[in-house]
Image (cartoon, rainbow, N blue to C red; front, side):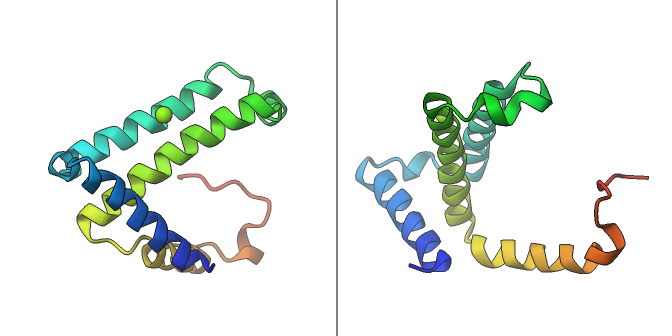
Length: 118
Ligand SMILES: [Mg+2]
């Protein structure tokens, strides 16, 4: 399955989940954004106080890896839901944004240099 079709299928599954429960009535953009931010917070909490140089190794154990994957999935589901509510083609928007980043950050000009604001 192509990534575009996977994203479309995920959108369909998220919509179906909400529809079956009559929860779409609660999915105004503000509420979905707050839910999304809450899930980002849950993901961030897993890394809270973990030294940066230990973050990868700390989450390589199966149970911690599963917890990170679970929170990342929550984030993705709410992001897909938000895109659906707002009529945004998330795949196309991401591709356009990445193309813009390619233009703004030519690899030969920025290789090995962390992006920062002046
Ligand atoms: Mg969660």
